[in-house]
Length: 180
Image 1: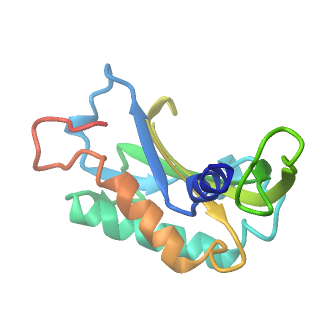
Image 2: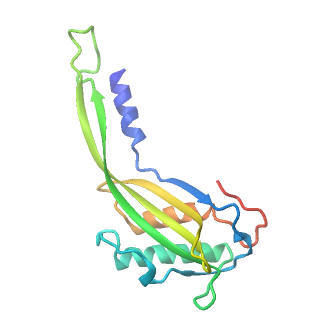
């Protein structure tokens, strides 16, 4: 039984992507058709060169630009109605796993469980959409994934995260906002 619990605990920490969104219900987002990226000088300092670098910046912006174009939005540096910005966070996490080394238990004297600590990194990509006039946040999407040796912050992971977040972003052709 404990062996089964240990397997379930490990699979619950799989590297699947978890995506959520939130929005300001009072915003007039459905009337927006033009966007731009928040200017570099308006962005807080980026302190991790492992995640905030030119390669990831280009990957994220390319994925977002393609996703918003599919939704009917135009990139417009001169007169945007909303601004887009992103954040990346990577946090160290740990999980306690209790295992039964022999696969069975025969009473309290034979019970010899072992507890292991599994350490891993959890990465989060956050997309913020702000009203261009007042800089108020009107939509936020975030994607969380476990980062391991096989799945670091890669172009594939960025594209998957952005695609899933923007699936929940309203389309210019859709009069009904479909938020989750």
